[in-house]
Image (cartoon, rainbow over all chains, first blue to last red; front, side, top):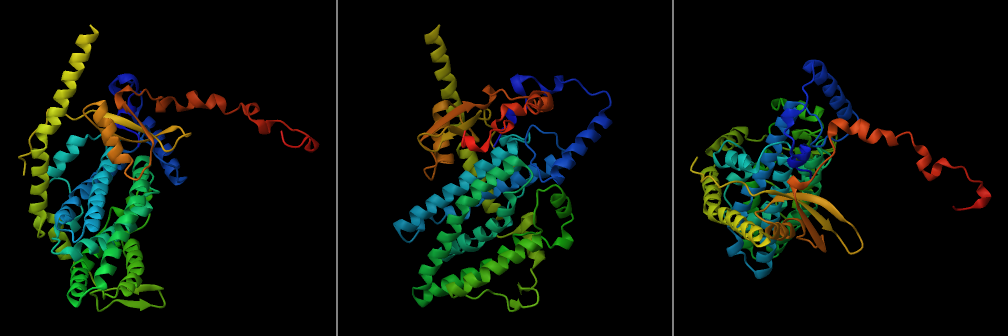
Length: 339
Length: 100
C-alpha cells in the first residue's frame, strides 16, 4: 500500500503546481487516459489522476469495509472469555486480532486517497459512516461463533476475492492479504461446528438454531438485488466491482449448500432447490425491509455496537496522547544532549 | 453520538518494509500510524508478521520518502524506451556458440 504522504514529493504543497490554462481540455485529456487504462484492465495508483467520483466511491467503500472489520471484532470478542477450551480461546483471539489487522490494512488503503484516519474514525463514531449490518445482530451462544466463521466470513470471502482484482492498486493489495488470512477464519468456524455436530443432541440443536438465525442475514450481506442497486453499473465500469450482488449471492448459496449437507444441518429456506436447467440452487425471497431497517440504525445491536466502539476510543485517548507526549520528550532530550 | 474525545493529534504515518527470509531484500508491505520508531516496529510486527512473514523489519517515517512526480512519468522514464541495445537479446549470436 502506498500512502498519501507520497503524493506530494519534497513537502511541496500541491497548490503551488502551475495551473493549466484550459482546465477543461486538460481534464478531458486526463479522463481519456484514465478511461483507457481502466478499459485495458490496468491499475490506478495513488499518485495517478482519477475522477473525483471514483475517488469518493473508493473512500466510501474502503472506509466502510475497514469499519466493518473493526466493528466485527465486537460480537466475537465477547466470546473470548467464554470459549469452551484453551484451544478455542487461542483460535478466537487470533481471529479477532486478524480482524483488527484487516481494518488497519484497509484504513491505510483509504488514506492513500487523501482522507485521514481521524476523519474516518470520526465518521464511524458519529454514526455518519456505515459498516456491515451483519454485526448489528447478537451472538447468543457459542454456536454463533462457529456460524459467523463459516457463513459470515464465507460470505465476506465471496465478496472479497473479486476485489483482489479491483482497479485501485492499494485496495486490491490489501484484499490479497485479507483473503489469505480469511480462509483460516472460515475453516476454523466450520471445523468448530463439525465438532459440535459430533456432540449431544443439545449441541446439535444449538448449531441448527444458530444456522437458522444467521442464514438469511448472510444472504442479505451481498446487498440489494441488482435491479435495485443503481451504483453497481458504475462500480463495474470502474473495475471496482467485478461481479454483481446477485452473482455473488448465487455463488455463495451454491458453495454453501453442499457444506451444510456435510455438516448435517438444514438451511432455513423451503424454496431452496437445485435447478438443473440453470445449474444453480434456487432460493427464496430475502426480507429487504428487515435489512434496510437494520442498515438505518434500528437493528437489535446498532446502538450497543457503536457505544462500545466509542467507549473503547475514548478510553484509549490517554494512551494515544501519552505516547505522543513521550515521543516529544524523548526527542527534546536527544536534541539537548546533542547540543 | 458525538461525545468522541478529540485527540491531541494523529500519530504520524510510517512505511513498513519486511525481509521475508534471510537472503532476500526488504520489501514494502504497507503503512501504519505510530507515535515513535520503537512503537512503529512493534506495531509492524503485530500488523504485518502475525504468520511469520518476516525475519527483519524496517520502518521509515512516510514524510521522509521522496517520490517521483506522476506528471513527469513520461520524460522521467521514457528515455530508456528506445535503448534496446541495453538488453542481451539485441545481439545475434550464432547457434554453435551455445549458451552465452
